[in-house]
Image (cartoon, rainbow, N blue to C red; front, top):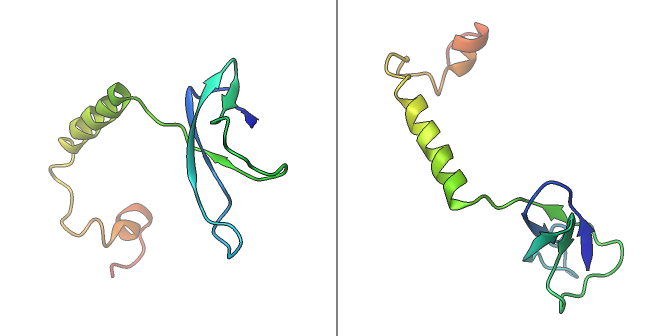
Length: 96
């Protein structure tokens, strides 16, 4: 089965949420010429809805982690209760 995918190099196809007649499964495919190609032995009925989640490369994951670490160094003077009272600090609501 092939699914249209314009942007991502690697995608994951997911079946709709679990029901008694259908279990959730994850399938990995690859994009070839703008089309997601799934394993040839996979049998999905016509009309099956799927969700695509791009898988990121190790380099992209490391770049993301590096950026988070850089940003974490900017948060030295934040209030200790920021997580619990973020609405107070962002929107002026009463503290919890």
